[in-house]
Length: 187
Image (cartoon, rainbow, N blue to C red; front, side, top):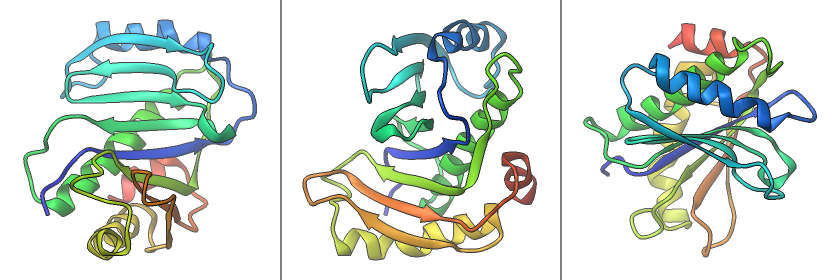
């Protein structure tokens, strides 16, 4: 299977998030090239949309959302363009980029954000290549368990969520209680 449009979401431990504070932070990230191996282009503010995408750092290869969907705020990494590498490496790259963005956000003292590592969401935004069914789950289960083990120390528990009309999505309960930095150091 060829790596496709992967999304990884890690949830915040914080309650209410002041989304408007993110706009100047993301603009500074663009100027300072805080994510050095990506071309960051713009910032979109959707804070006015209830249960929406929040604030988005738009890039050429990927987008980074501080997403507030489902009353579960968190950082959502979304790869839009292809990945040069094998399937497993593509999943691990998506995990790493999401964790690294969370670490950068945690380092922004004015935001007061903290991200939990005990649960995450993995999604594929390509219903043609990855329909939300048991066959796709069987293909992704092993690589997701391997990536989860590499970053969090155990394969955790995986649960396919959503209906056949939804993008393929897996809720991953890692069982980890460490920090984002701990997960990145482990990998």
